[in-house]
Length: 183
Image (cartoon, rainbow, N blue to C red):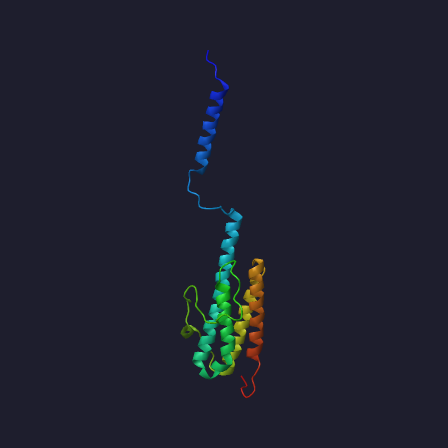
């Protein structure tokens, strides 16, 4: 009958523990793993950002179509178009990045290429009707952003609320006749 001394038992136990730990860490470490819920939330936020940016990008294309059809409206629409371009950029930016401030450029550099072009957008026959159509598009886009607030994470919800409010203001301004220009 053989007896196992305490030192042999401890050595075998330590070797077994080391082998088990080595097996746990043998795979390459890719950093902390996000839980499934966090991954799902990040994917949902990315999809929401794409939809919101696309809605504003489509509105921007509509501005371009109207100014292409009625160049005389370019000066009137330029500030509103610049704001919409800034909205596209802000809505397109990544998850935790701060929203651009007013000092940033309002130029448009779309992330994915737009699926439409201003040439494919039907513009009404008169400037007044085109402005009315543009106001309706602003309201619809603002409503889309406001509806997205329900599922948006807090920081992005604040941005969406701001963009929706600006869209509502744009719709109001487009519906108002300007001095010397009935529409």
